[in-house]
Length: 419
Image (tube, rainbow, N blue to C red; front, side, top):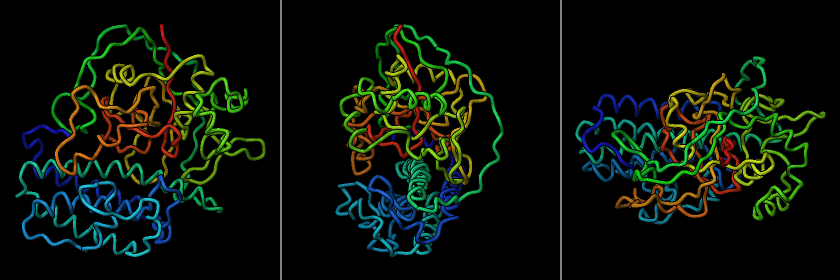
């Protein structure tokens, strides 16, 4: 991460933010049973109990263990269970076996959280600046896991044959279908992208650097469910012409014919959400599509995906705090546009850019330096945040990244074209 080298926020402000972030995570799991919180639905997802414990292990390890004299680990066995991928921290339990950790129980994990929370708050006034930055990083790290927690719970419940709704459905308000896509033109010029200024950013967001844009246009909204249904009806998933070779092989191998969680019932497209299975909203942004699907749709539509530089330059003119983002525990889903361009919230937007280091990037020393840099291979950049992204977490420079086949996150599509 990078933050202002001065003590950017006072201890009371950081303590309040810390408490709110930690409380929101626990509110998210309040509807879950111990069994719900233990099961792992696929290797890409983690059990809710693991998210609760891992984010706590992060704080205990990099703040309390390393900066608080005399601190004793809550449980000497937990680092093996709840380390994620930090090689510098030693051996760890296999990712695909996290669902086998039936003990500690959910209540014991919550007790672990409360123990560490109290220790961090007590230590905060005496922590050096480097440790204070790690507390801020811990909050941002937990917000990332809040989004993963939501999408992992969603995937888990979708695998349950009862398709349970864990939150009551929000009332549906009829809305008009959005009009045709409008285009925001971008000039061919040298621009600068990447984080600059004070405040928090992840290491992969910098250094700020110059890059060349060609004349282009970027869509003023994302693709809707209704538009995606037209793609399906036109044979979009059965025509190899639209697909990259790897994507076509994936479609054939996995039998893909619609976005994740879509199912045709009684001749109506439905989707599964945290509020159960319901008909798709044709005016809402399409979500849970892979990079392969996004690229194929763009080809079918006679367009392409934007580069991350095109996206960042266009998005910088819009309000990062607006849009449909996560404010509290409960059902989340993309919502129809209220009108006007919006670049933040609803769905993460696939770009055509590979997740690679910016010119001059250097990983931070130590285990925390493994946070992003080691993943800069084979993944694609997404921008903008989603309905599951905590409000205030995203920035125009924020770079999310996933492998091209992954689609259990709230991922969608914004088109671009050359001029």
